[in-house]
Every structure is written in structure tokens, then in C-alpha cells.
Amino acid sequence: MIDPARFKPKTVYVIYISSTPEKVWQALTDPALTRQYFFGFAIDIERKTGGAFRMLYRTAACTSAAKLSTGRRPGGWR
Amino acid sequence: MNKPSFVYVTYIASTPDKVFKALTSADATSKFWFGNAVTSDWKVGSPMTFRREGKLIVEGKILENDPPRRLSYTFRSMHEPFNGSEPASRVVFDLEQQRDQVKLTVTHDDFVEDSKVFVGISNGWPLVLSSLKSYLEANRVLWAPWYEKERVAS
Image 1 (cartoon, rainbow over the protein chains, first blue to last red):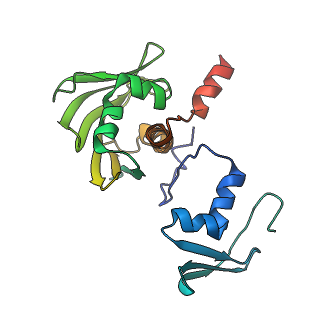
Image 2: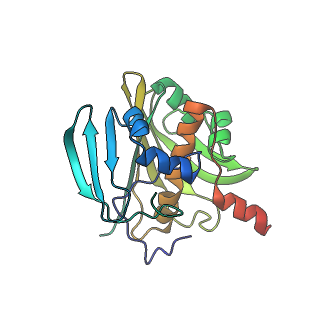
């Protein structure tokens, strides 16, 4: 049980998935998979901390870009 | 004033009828809600209970029953460690059909100030609603770590 005195509600979303961390990780980082569940958007990710991150829609239109702040994949990025 | 409220939105590939039925069926809730069976005649003003392994877990009364769009009941935690020590709060389920999917919004509010039950339900709802989604979409259910701990401890 969380200590209510220290509990700070945050705008985070929690979901539980009947899967494995490896499969969820792959679904988050593999463009072929993101295209299927993210309405056609393909993730383009430079697999290292500080690397570039973009979501691409169909052709090369860049819709969103950011830098990776952390990547804690078991075994590191590859 | 520090009266918190909890709001959780999830989308389920199902119909409002099926979601509503799952939320109001003792058989369905015992499956996806980790053994907690809900019972009520679902008339406004009628009592509602959740029981698990015969023990009273939650009691309340029906505030609204508008299938398959809206369901609301009061919610008093009767299980450990609360044992009814806090007054009833309020749960509202809003179901919105979006073509072949349902937007389900759960709002749990009307807590006392600095409610400890609020902390408990903030942990509980994401798992319950994830399990409901798995149940309706894939006929699979999730399991609750806190009940596993209880089993190991006893």
C-alpha cells in the first residue's frame, strides 16, 4: 500500500497488458508494429540515449520529434 | 479542501451492451474482477454488494441505471484495512459507442478529505479496467498482485 501522506496524484496513465516486457518494448519501438496500432504512424527512433525520435505518417512527413531522454531496455539499446 | 477524484478512460473493442453487461454481472465480475462478484437488482436506490470468497468487499446503492450508457453507484470499502471506516464514495461509468468500439470513462469521486480509500482505488481501477478490456477483447483476465500476496501470507 502506498503511503497516503506521500501520495501525489500525477497525470500518468497506467495500463496492464497480458504480455511480456520484451513484446511491449518491441511494439513501442518497431515501426512495422507502431504502424498497425498507431493509426499508420511509423516510429523512427535512433536507438541510443539522446538519439532522435520521430513519428512519421505514411511518407516522410515529420509530425512529431523529440530527443530520447532515457532508454532502459534490458541489455541496452541495440 | 482536498477532495480528490479519480478519472480513468479506456477504449474497448466491444459494444456498450457487452461492457454494461460485464459490469453488472456477478459471473463476469468474478472472472475479470479477481473473484469479486457483484450483486444487485440494479434498481435506483437498491443495494449493491461485491463479495469475494463469501466476504463483503464493497457495499453501495444504485444511483443511476441507464443501460447501456450510464451506471452509477455509491461505493463503501468494507474490506481490510478500511472495514467501512470511511463513508461511501461514488462511482460513475459512462459508456460511449464509437462505431465498433466503446469509450469507457470511470469517474470515482465524492471522497472525504485525505481519503485513504482514494489511494487504494487509484491503484485498483487501472488493473480492474485493464482486466475488463482483456476479458471482453480476448477472453483473458489479469490477476491482482495484492491477492497473491494475501495467499502467500495466509
